Image (cartoon, one colour):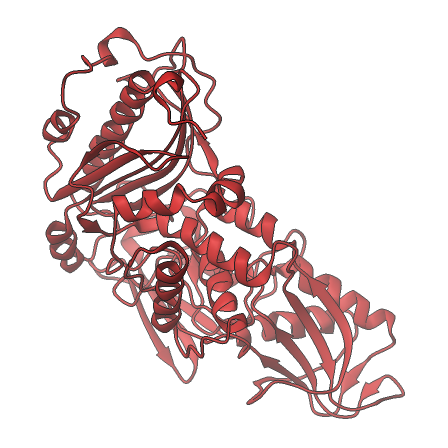
Length: 499
């Protein structure tokens, strides 16, 4: 989970400087050992750590020898809990197997007829294959390439095609509507399917703008509108009227100025409107944008290719980008011929693949972990991580997790070196990955905590961060730290199974 919260006390957001998601806290661990206060007597049960965390709900964890699969430590390890963004680690394996690390998504401009005197005799179609990273700058480059070919327009105008994968207006329908980390999914995406909302006090009111912000260009589009209104709560309202995203925001929450990203619900049309404006700036008249009913056939005039899948996966695991997870998971299901028609169906297809490949049976409703209905146990997750496939393909792509003292201070010596995937929802915290212990032993671990009832109850509050969620997350992360530091000291290479 991520994004900026608009509250009266925090007047919202500083303007973002990049379309790329911000890295989450926790970098490479430099450390060398837990302070003496963190060194529990080895005969003590780690179940005591769970009691002392006072989380409520359930917590399950397990540490396995990564090579032999031997259970080193466990507590409630078979309880199935929401994995949150730890699900992205499974998605990474699923997509890499189905698509290959060299796979690149393409966005194409297709002419459905010949070009005569610089005019396409038919439609010009902007068609995607699911690239989650396409941005305004890339569309601007495509417009320049089209101009260089001498194209000045199209008799049929511009249409868009986003049907290469199943399209959905949002990842998780129970989330608040304004959360930018819960956008639509489509075969044609733009700017992580977000639009940039900025405001400034002007006279007795506010100047509001919505644009598809790039490095240089800031195209305004008709796919969304916003109005400031006088009211208490909610902070935002959303409706779709005649295909347009209609937003209102409570005037009292805006302060003097600010900005944030809002989700876009019709991303293919959004991308088309942005491209049409960028093309017009190059002297290419395309007129109104329509949505194509089927995949285009014709001549490909311009192609834009994403980075390779290995890099997309690495960035997804680092930044925990929900859209990337959903797009590569959907593309994998399509490539495998799973016949999925929606995101939950693709989540089920991935669950079936996990059972066939690893012999465990999760219940996954999406590919990002944003949907709180997904379930997997710590034991199931750790068994996946302990397989040769996961150790070879996934481990090198995971981010380093810093180990720290009880007040966040660095440690003089490291009890272990950890690479893992984090996961956070309100009243859910998860961590799963690998630890190399102080003695050189490799551990595959999973730690899942979730107060599911409290999470469900909090969804009625219409708050992005309900009361108690932040402190829950802090206690859960400290529990994870205590377990990792204990395991790093307790399990040495001398105890490891050989072979």
